[in-house]
Amino acid sequence: MNNDKMKYDVQFCSCGRVHFIPTEKINNAIENDKEVLVVCNNCGNSHIIGADRTQDYEGKECFMMYSFDKRDTEINNTSKIDSIIFTPGVSVRMMTGGEATFHVSDTFIDWHTKKPDNVTNEQWEKLRKTVDVQSTINWISDENKLEQMSNYMSGIDWKGTKYEKQWHK
Image 1 (tube, one colour):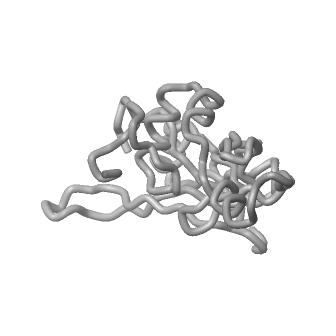
Image 2: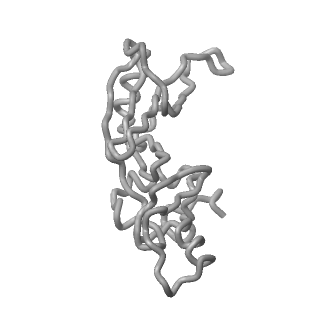
């Protein structure tokens, strides 16, 4: 994970928040054969980020990164945890005018904003599942975080923005 440009690892939380974890913290943990525990201050969900040492095709040592959801599990062995990061995450802005309150299968959803009377149910279903990309860009505003976030297939349509990637097309 030695990419000087990559300052953050991105974690999409089931509550619709996006967590940006400093790669320096992750790299330090991995170098010490440890993991980072990330806890969402919004919903309480947690993720473990770590790596397994392995060898590449030329026999050189490398790391296979992993990240997994620790929802509804108990952590009994804390000796492998290098650091615990509590983070509220950053909200994703939605076309409803509200923010995402749920994220699953590359779809952000706003379950909390009330449907206006002048919008049909069909229109509302589309709005509550569509990210307001420009508003999200303005809200997050950190170039590095946005660049890293756009590297994931997360349900955000980056087309027409400077964060659009070739594979988005």
